Length: 204
Image 1 (cartoon, rainbow, N blue to C red):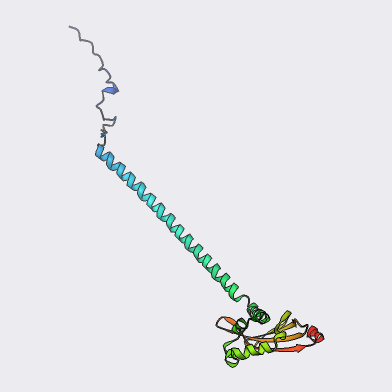
Image 2: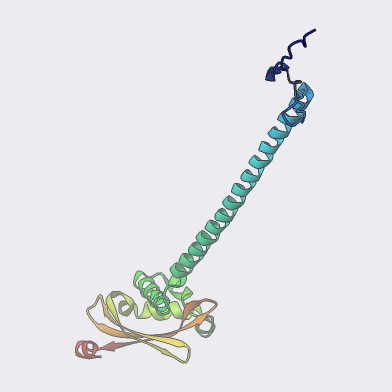
């Protein structure tokens, strides 16, 4: 009796491997997330985006506040500085402004404004009635047509200013002002007037 023929076992197709099992015998489980899990993930992502947006917003607000404060400080400094310059001017310009105001007030006959430029010490020594009477008695001398400052000198903390004046009557005068700085502004602490000849006025 002959031996029956032997056939090799048929190759197993790859598609017949158990589902989820690789060539190394490792199983891979693919689990679909539940709707609740998907909802939680979406909420987490939304919260993360919201947190990032809040952080960016806070950073922007912080920079805006810093920039706004810096701008406010700069503008405030500029306003204070410009106000101080307008009020006090350069070290020797404020005394000249006081002298100009005094001469203009006297020329207009405004005794109150002229008297207001005098220092407290001078006003105590010369009451307003006496000052007004003096100006009225020498009215033509104080009616200044033109003037020019010829000397400015600081001496012992005081500013001395000489001005050559031409009155409406054509006469020339020399006005000498002594000013003191009290309380952040200049005041006329003393003043003298005298008539001068034209030649002497031009060469003084």
